[in-house]
Amino acid sequence: MTITLNHTIVPARDKAAAAKFFADIFGLKRGRSGHFSPVRINKALTLLFDDDSKFESHHYAFHVSNREFDAILGRIKKAKIVFGSAPWSLEDGKLNDWNGGRGVYFRDLNGHVLELMTVPQ
Image (cartoon, rainbow, N blue to C red; front, side, top):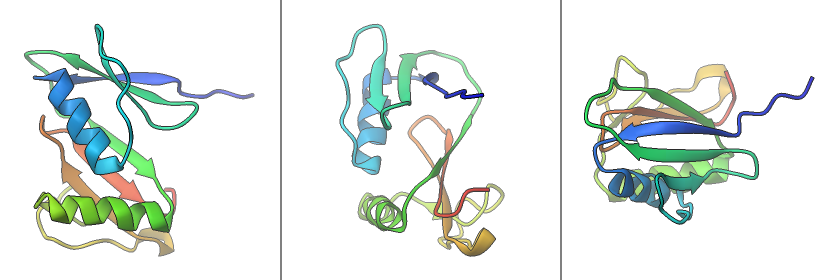
């Protein structure tokens, strides 16, 4: 069976600002804004940022290469974004080494928790 997640909607107070933040931190390009502000992650997945006034925090986890991890972490640090080693330690300024890789957690502009890992869970 081949099932691939194609897109998911990410609620945001300002969809354009949220898409820009995400694209800038992850080193990606934004698509044309319409009803949604899209950011293509890869050939199979697009995040569609959408304006919403009330929503709960979501968790989005991304498996990345060591090179991508270093580049994204560098942009996180350059932007002075607080990060941590676990969902319960979002501000300890540390990385984790779960499953023999590296991982980090941080919040986006809307309070969503973003996770990077070099070894998938």
